[in-house]
Every structure is written in structure tokens, then in C-alpha cells.
Image (spheres, helix red, strand yellow):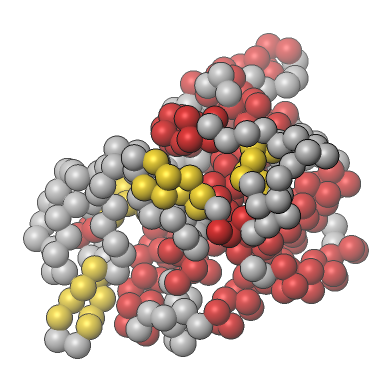
Length: 335
């Protein structure tokens, strides 16, 4: 039975189709799809060579899905120290502690997490000499992922000046702030000589690629953020010409296959300028692919639901997500 992704919105099936369909029960499908998607992540962020080295030994591995995801995380972790991230050790440790604590939450809102920072063990603060500073930037202004998150304010006084929730868009890591999409992902700078919270950020992003993590994430949240994104970005993209094979102009930015493309030029220099700021072309492509991958994995996971662990099937049957519950019920009626 093919899951009805349109339950999450009219354009969701077409979005998932951007990265292709695959059968989670086929080892060949899993190997090809996950390898391609990790290569796309590595190409965008810059750790392609490390990924190839990590993927090379996996030919004889039985669980290709788990092994490929781990290879991607390991390759990123090996590459990151060479980028010379610029945080202080105290700042990096403070960020890492927050991300690890968020990773223990079993809620369905890790794609965009919004928490009262004063409820975290560190208060989302770090020590800078004799003062305490916020470990992350406040993300309160209207942006491409939402209209801002100014409240509710923290229930207790913050030791480092938090007056708003801590909001992180971890599903699109390293582009983690709604209004900071104008260059390299801010999450890539999360690191110091002593700690690399960016590795934790990548690990949380990769949960969406794992069937269990994907199923536990509330897909309605992801669909709502994508709808907001396309509402504000769609008109900007629509102004671009479609790629004309054989007649393209060098250096011109085009729409091509659902993504942005520069003919015979650098995509890194291109972008879109809208009322909510500049959106770099590489950020656009990466973000769209993250949304597409989420729903492609959701579709494959639902199709293979009968072969998943019993506790996951039980979770799906009792989920707060009505689309998920309805699919489980349809599978049960079909026998």
C-alpha cells in the first residue's frame, strides 16, 4: 500500500519525489539511496573525500542503512576539526551540553526544537570570564521557517539574559536559524579545539534519515515549516528562468529539477533576495533536499511498516499524527 503523503499537504508527494523513491525492504535500494543522499550532504558541506573513505569498507556490511548513516556522521566528525571552528572551549562545551540534552528528549519536535532555556541543565549559558553568555543566538525575528518566536518568555530569570525561547531548526542543520540563511550554515561554526557541538547537531539532523527517528518526528510540524518556507521563497524562485538545455547562459541562475542551478558558474555566489533577507542558493538547495528526504524516508517507512519492530508499529498506531494513524488503520483493514 502506497502511503498518502498528500495528507500532509498538496505538494508533499512532489517534494518527496525530488529525491526519488526507494524500498526500505530492499538492501540494494537502501544502499543506493542512502549513499546518494549522504554524498549530497557531503558535497554541499565539503567533506566528500572523508565520506568516500568512510563508505569504502561498507560493501560487506549487512545493515547498510545504519552503517551508511554512521559512516556519514563519522566522516563529518573527521572533517570538522580541519575547518578550524572559532568558538571558545567554554562556548563549545556549553553548546554541546545543550544539544546532548535535547537529544535525550523523546518528543516529536526535534526538526524545530523550541524550549525554555532556563529548564535546561546549563540554562543554555556558558562562562566567558566572570560573565555568563547565551550559548546560541536568539532566533526571534520573522524568517523563512516561521514568523518568529518571541514567547512565552522563560519561566525563571535567565543567568545569561535569555528573554525568549531557545529555538533551533535542527532538521535543516547546519542552517539552524530561520533568518540566517545568507551564507554557510551557522552550525558549521559550532566547535573549538576541545569540543565539537556541530557533530551533535549533525547527529540530530540525521535522525530524520533513520526510520525510527523519522517515524517519531511529528511530520505535521515538518510540513507546516515547509509550507511557510515555500510561501516566502516560492515567489522568488518563480521569477527565475527554467533551465533551457542547449541554450543556457553562462553564469545565469536557473530553476532546474526543483533546485537552483548556475550554468558554468559558481552556485556559492548566487542567491535570492526577499523581504526576509538573502537566501544563498546552496542553502536553498540543501534545505529543500532536507525536507524532501524527510518525506521520502517517511513514505518508505510507512510502506515497510509491517517489517518494523512491534514497538514502532504500536507507536504509529497511537501517534498524535492522524495521517500516521490512518495509514496504520488502512494497513490493518487490508490485512
